[in-house]
Amino acid sequence: MVTAIWIVQGLLGLLFVITGSFKFFQSKEKVIASGGTWAEDFKPGIIKLISGTELLCGLLVIVPRLLGYGRYFTFISAAIIALIMAGAIYTHIRRKENSHAMINAVFLLMALFVVFTGWPF
Image 1 (cartoon, rainbow, N blue to C red):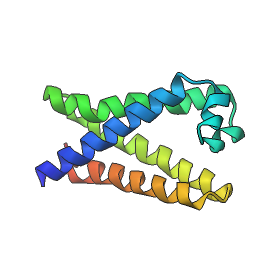
Image 2: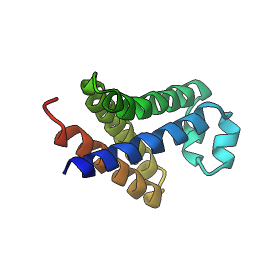
Image 3: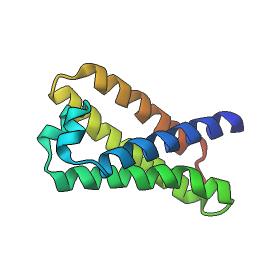
């Protein structure tokens, strides 16, 4: 079970570091052009806030467990990722982008797995 938790944590953290940094360092237009049509509904500052939070939480899902202390950051970050994914699912369903909503549902389940398998810290 510990191996499964590490695999899911690693995948979740890596995924959010990559996607969060991509969105954080690109303009709104480039995010939209690369397939992030959801960004049409948001101002550039909100996109930076969401992507910065994804990037930070992606790091905090992995790093504290690797260092051996501050494990609670892992679970708090995974919970924040779950909240972001719930909002992403809502946005995609509202825009009738159901395939994107399903992908985000998988990420939501991964985040919830990390939160609840390690609780209490």
